[in-house]
Each structure stands twice: as C-alpha cells, then as structure tokens.
Length: 272
Image 1 (cartoon, rainbow, N blue to C red):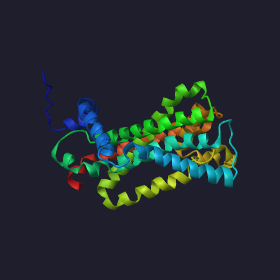
Image 2 (cartoon, rainbow, N blue to C red):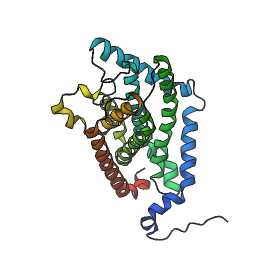
Image 3 (tube, rainbow, N blue to C red):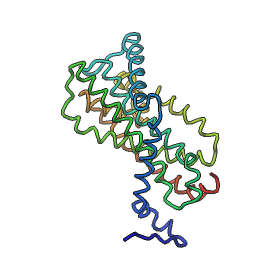
C-alpha cells in the first residue's frame, strides 16, 4: 500500500525532521544520480580520484621532505604520512564544494516539488565517499609497497570519517544557503577550499607547529581529523587536544549550518 503525504498549513515546520525520513528514497535517488553523473561518459572517470591525490602527495613529499626536510613523528615513510593526510582533506574539500553548489544545480526540482531541501546537500556530500573509497585503495597499495602494517586502531577510522562528513555537511549547509542568496559567492568557495589546504597539515605533521600556536592551529577542525587518520593508519601519537577541538568545532559548524539553512529554506524557491 502506497503511503500518502498530505501537506497542510504549518506541516513543513512541525514535521520537518520526520519528512527527512519519509523522503529517504529521494535521498538515495539523488545520491545515485550524482554518482552516475560524476563518472558516466568521462574520459578518465574514477582515475581522477587517484591521479589528483597521488600527484599532490608526490609534490608535497618533495617540497616538505626533500627541500624543507621536515621530520616525521612516527615510523611511516613521509609519502605515507602525506597520503594519509590527503585522504580526509580530499573527501572534505570535494564534499564541501559539491554541497555548496548543490541547491543551484537542482533549481528546477526545488521550484516545483515539496521535500526537505536538506536532502540535496546531504546527498551531494555522500558522493564524496565514493572518491574516498577509490583513493583508499591506493593507500592499501602503498602499505604493501612500503611493507608497512597499520596498527590495530585502524578499526576506529570510521569515527574520523564521520567527523569529516559532519564538518563538510555543516559548513556546506551554510555556504549553499548563502550561495542561493548571493550567486557570485560561488566564485569565493574554490578560494576558501584552496586556502584551507595551506592551513591544514596535509603535507606536514601538526607536530611541527610550535606549541604556543597549536591551540589556534587546532581551531581548524580538519587538523584533528587528519591527526586522527594518521593515528589510525600510521600509529602516530594520538592528539587528544586537537581531537576534542575537532569534535566541538564540528558540532558548532553543524549547528550553525542547520540553523541558517532552516532559516533561509523558505526563501529558496523564490531566490533560486
């Protein structure tokens, strides 16, 4: 028996979170559509998810290890340390970019049909997990190449993936709501992502940061996520302070993103 959804005055506010569950099939459909669009009829397709982090890892390894001669806190080779940091950053940056432009890319759907609009940026963030899974295969190959055995805490890796997901989702909700109102804001988003790469310990370890700046450096939630990835994958020392900062700031971004998105959601159909 097919379920009926009756829209009445005030229903969208009262039952919004219940509607997110009711429209879960739409979430699956949009996620699968975004994945197919990303990889269908492309020249290099999934290979780009491998080529980009590998090339970036090579460049960062040469610059920070060979030229700057920065140390590695653990026993893993420098290239492994860089790639372990590149994985969460690539997922975060891709998910953030996709989420921030998701509403504009689905303008026709938003202006014609009722559904919780939060489904759209959420489905776009999910597609970043596909790139992450493809890139993770290269990490496994690197483990074999360097004959490096990851520690047992690799089982906790999903926790840090979840933190990166909610961080990208929270910031993405805020940016996509701003992007609908101010269309030229989409030109600023790539700059934000690029700037973030330079203030995130992707090509180097956060242990090289002077202790008097470590707290301020940890206000970037991806610092705690990347430190967590390297702890899970390479056995580097666990950074409890950056981990707690990542949790707190991610929850703050998520709250701000949801609050602002819900505030602006009623105007999306008119502005888009």
